[in-house]
Amino acid sequence: MYADRINALPPYLFAAIDESKARMVAKGVDVIDLGIGDPDRPTPTHIVEAMCEAVRDPATHRYPSYAGMLEFRKAAASWCKETKNINIDPVSQTLALIGSKEGIAHVPLAFINPGDVVLCPDPAYPVYKIGTQFAGGEPFIMPLLEENSFLPDLDAIPTDMLARTKMMFINYPNNPTSATADRSFYKEVVEFAKENNIIVVHDNAYSEMVYDGYKAPSFLSVDGAMDVGIELYSLSKTYNMTGWRIAFAVGNEHLIKGLGKVKSNIDSGVFDAVQRAGIAALTSSQQCVNDMNRIYEQRRDVLLKGLKGIGLDVKPPKATFYMWVRVPDGYDSMGFSKLLLEKAGIVATPGVGFGQYGEGYIRFALTQSTDRIKEAVYRMEKLRL
Ligand SMILES: *Cc1c(COP(=O)(O)O)cnc(C)c1O
Image (cartoon, rainbow, N blue to C red; front, side, top):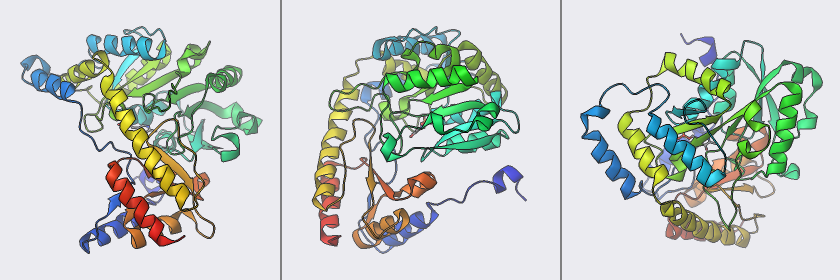
């Protein structure tokens, strides 16, 4: 009944976890969900207020423009200048997206022909690979290994693959490993992309979720990056706006144009009222972002201390709201997440759900209050691993 592209989708590895979670909840267990990467706190009030005002204005009720309102694109470009010190033209180098997931899924349709290779990290957000496959492309896995600080080893990609490679996805600060990349890595990527004629798509969804004074650089801040790539920024994680569906792409104008061509034939843009709320988010004081980061930092420190206390080897992440933790000896990632759920009522995501190189790890999301995280730590202590 389904098309081949649907039948070819990988099995949904979280189904077993979802099922057991539902069973535990039905039994009345107080489950602590550290599984999902979705901010638990509400969208800041000034953004909600901007939306309320905008939605009452009939001017927002009609079809939006495909590329996004010029004011939204200007706000996005100014935000890029302020936070990342990159110069972006709001007209030719900026495109509004219905969430960055939408951009990731659609960008291969603009550039990938059947048989073209796309370099995809593993473990990773699954959409890079699936978007590639939907476009008829062939994903080639770049393993993200702990010994390489979870950066891909570009020298390890075989030459015959490179000849067929048209695009690569990268994502730092990284989901699920919480690894960060510095500008020297981006320089290496630009050189590699120029040498091999590869389009770079950098997913920067966690650009502002940073701790201990760390600042996540823009890929586009490196010389030559604008020739080879685009960068996707999302308001979802930065402003607790996952449900609103708003993000933007910036970068090389031909690439932006190509993605725009796909989108104008598939969707009709972001609701103007949501774009106005987005403008409020991007142009107002960024104090709300700092405040959220303080909260995540505090949660991180509580979980870090707890995990160390039960003998797990963890380092404090500098960015993202994830902790990527090696499972104890004697477990695989599925087995350990099962144990946490069944014996402690804690949901954490098995690393293998992000790809084969996620095996041996588990991901905790800091999306519960400090008190709930303390409770989770207390329950883990009682497991006596
Ligand atoms: C959450 C997430 C996204 C999706 O963000 P939206 O803008 O809400 O679509 C994209 N990439 C990564 C790595 C994410 O974790």
